[in-house]
Image (tube, rainbow, N blue to C red; front, side, top):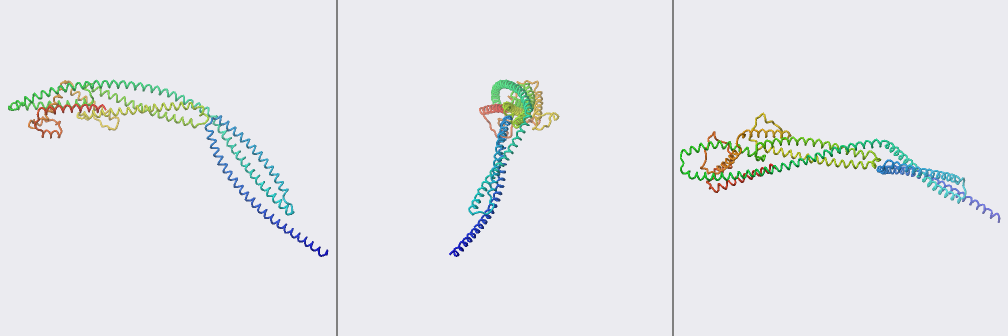
Length: 538
């Protein structure tokens, strides 16, 4: 009975040992596979940590660059002392933070050493039961997770510590740079104050120049008013003279009518003696008519161009225009020089303003009032520059007006010729052309004055008006009443081809029609004179 039971127990023990061996083998295989997996995971974690550290560094560098740019922009609006104070406070706070991070780092290192010791202690020394092996595996996994967490924290702490050290170094550099710049601020401020004093002195000088220019402007206005009053008086005198001439023309018309009636009475009884006398009279009248017409036309053109009747006054006016032209040229040169000086001063002040803006942030708060004063002075100088430019434009317009008047006068006097040695060839676009034109006009006027000197101007004017009237009346005579002119007595024809064709086609007209035509001719002549005077004034 006992022999039959005993083998069964041994078999059971053997079976149990065999099962235990199988379990130990399975446990060893599981342990080895888990160790291989753990090692593989550790390698992967190490690679990922290296990648994270690299990414953290790149992100920190980018953030550090942005932070430094923002901090630099923030310090630009502060004074030197304020920026130094802020930097010192920031450095102190960073030092405190660095000390706290160092303490945390040391604490974590001690904790890591303790965990490593505990890990070594809990590391399996041999094979045990299946339950203790599973517990140790779980414990190791928990310890590994804690270790990874602690390593991550340690790496973050080290990275923050390095970043804090970099920031501290940058702040130290900025602080040293600001301290070096603060040593030169006093000399720069002294130089700026000296420049500001010079600018104020120059501003006072320019203010005095402006006052002088203002007085000159008022004087010019007074002279202009006097000239306008004188022009008004001369216009009244001309109107009075025109009225007198009109009355004289009416008298001449009456006399012409009487002559016509007398000619009609004696037209039926002509004889040879009267015809011969008429021919001689017409020949003498033709010569006188030619001379009178020439003087009349020249004097009329001068009157239309200048608007005066006295020859001496005409000469004085042209002389005064020459002096005025020279004075305007001189003023224009002075204004151009002054304008260039003002532009240079503006550029200098603008450069000073830019230098004051970007030379340093510390002086901005103390020099802000000085900068505003400089800007006001710059605006005043700009206004003065604009005023000088306007005056320069006005002088140019006045010079162009004088030039147009001289050209108009030269056109009126172009029938008077000068000697070849007095005429000089000058480009019409040059400034000397105006002076040359004025000289030629003066010589022509002197020539004309010499021709009419010693003659009775009133009688000459009256004869010129009468001769002009008779010439216009003769242009309306019928074709049958013609005058034969000898070759030596021929004069330049004053009528155009169109008027000659009208004379050829004209028929006999009545006295009333002749009167109407004469009145129309006189009215058109007076209107032309008024229009020419208005255009010359404009």
